[in-house]
Image 1: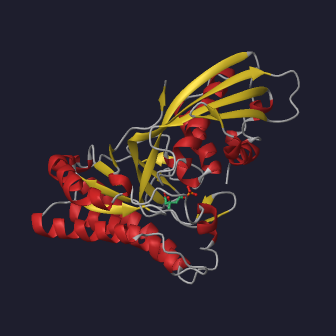
Image 2: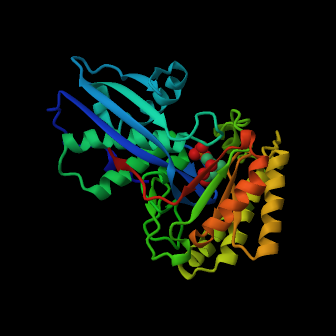
Length: 359
Ligand code: PMV
């Protein structure tokens, strides 16, 4: 795989001091990525909706150093120094250092905040790492003004992927594919690409209400989870299925067949959890209230003809997906019938978004 394109050749270290600030979103996968090989190469292609309201805002202050021997950074989260988060970011910098040699040249102070509550069970790695990647690319652009926006987005996604696979899908929007897929032109295992086709109007401004069922720390880290796919008895079949689901979903996104959309998306969510149920060691990441919500969504769909559906991440929270034209009806249903299953009644209304924003 050709990664040489991401190693900068012409950089002038003319900048002494600079600060860049970016807002980047979380995303929710419709076809899931679960299983990878080194270095962060997915076993199947995935596609996600980029979100809008759930995002990270990060600024990095760069100050030129006298010596360039090691990578040096400070990390603040919500204004507080966060030593606990440093190892993950240090590992990220270590993985990207050959693609971003300039990180040796500057002392970096990173200030980050999330729009969603910290331990809400909403993964912050996608938005967190994509925000750092955009700040780095902003510096790289200043050091080499010839870089195009297309290259910047591609390299930011490439870097973010090395931190957390799903972060590769948090640079652009509204739909991003990551992972090489024969029917998706330009798709790559190295970075996410925007879904290039005209999407049916029913999927425009699609709504995602995130029901916070369990706000605790993740029971299974995604590293452990992905590793469980190595000796998993159903792994190969699963990877094939995901790629087939992506082929079908890409047609559905174009032709607006919403019943098929519901079928693929819910099956993907349950299959992700089925992989955990059938791995060894095995895990149940759903909680009783996750199932209560799923059953309530199915009854509501049956009774009202609504096109509401759900998807899940590697946790107990439920993402409720529905078209914009059902917003009023479904938001009321969530408030009246689903919020009681959420921890402290908490949920977040979000919708599909368009990716990274410079602030
Ligand atoms: O990006 P990671 O390594 O945390 O993996 C996340 C995987 C899922 O969120 C469960 C699915 C996906 O495709 O986002």
